[in-house]
Structure formats: structure tokens, C-alpha cells
Length: 112
Image (cartoon, rainbow, N blue to C red; front, side, top):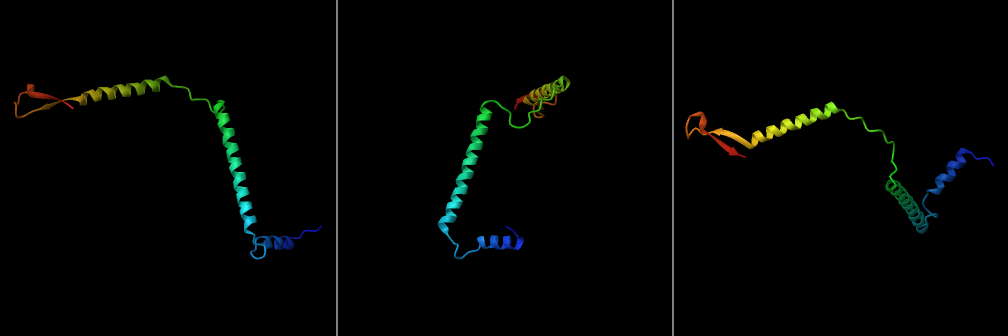
């Protein structure tokens, strides 16, 4: 059997042509069958993946965590301690009330 390109393209063009070959029930059956196959494939993939995750297996390439640097942890802790001190400065702020007196002891502590 000799298959030539023009004969092949002629046959394939006729397969998608409308006319006498129009059959809605066949087309819907093919469409629904493809949908069901894709739905079952998706369901199988999700069940397999769920089972793998519940067993504790890794999905993908698990790399080792980076080693912790104690110096960076200490610097971050010092930063947060400095912020905590700054926060207490904002909670009790001293305002000078000029109407009371001009003396330095006339400051009023106002909690925020």
C-alpha cells in the first residue's frame, strides 16, 4: 500500500467537512467521552497525589535547609529589642505644657 501526501490530506480534509457526515449524537458522544476520560484522569491524579502526601512523601526535589547562622539570629534579636525599647518610649511621652509654667519640672506625662 502506497500512501501519498496529497491522498492523505484529501482524506483528512473530508473528515472535518460538514454535510452528509453531520451527526450530532456521535459528536456529543465523543465530546462527553473525552470529558469523562479527562475527569477520571484528573480524579486518579488527585487521589494518587493525596495518598502520597498523607504518607509523608515529598513532592518534588526536597533540598536540605540552609544552616542557621547564630550571628544573624543575634542581630535580629537585638533589632527587636531596640524596637521594644523604642515602643516603650512612645507609650509614655513627656510634653511640656507652656500654660502651667516655663520651668523644666512642668512637663506632663501623657500616656498614649
